[in-house]
Image 1 (cartoon, rainbow, N blue to C red):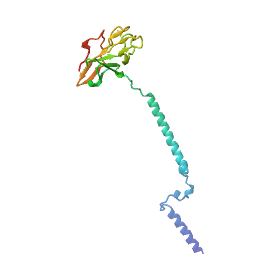
Image 2 (image 1 turned 90 degrees about the vertical axis):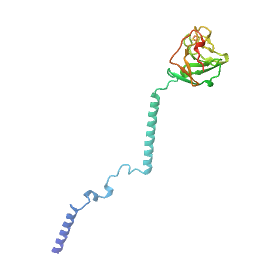
Image 3 (image 1 turned 90 degrees about the horizontal axis):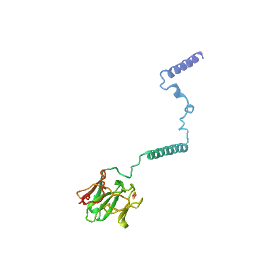
Length: 198
Ligand code: FES
């Protein structure tokens, strides 16, 4: 009996020695899995996890849309009126003799006279500066402010406008009509030297 007890003790001692430096597993690995704390998302049911991601996505989308709206609101708008410069009006044949074509972005009218020549008329009334519209039915420009009237060449038909509408230089290159809005020519009345010919 004494011999048996001794052998048990020695085998237990051997086991302890084996679990020491020679055992590759760390002591924690021996702990049961149920005792390890799971990751928060791992314990979420799949439906809840899906809804959570969905709400996150929708929230991100709403924030992006809000930022886009703010940027659009703050972005400077492009003016409808171009700055001074060369305006390419178009091919000569595009304009019929006796016609008036408005170029709102350049603030002028391109008038083609009955003889085929061109004049670029400022749309600013020479009385007090109102914008003068072309009234096709009356074949004249009529100022809405004080009823001054101008003919196709910009000459005064009815006061109080003191002089003809200003003009911009026109040149025709390779059959294309171009207007220089950077330069404005004041004049008292129409003169044949003011027109450009194709
Ligand atoms: S501003 Fe045009 S008639 Fe007075």
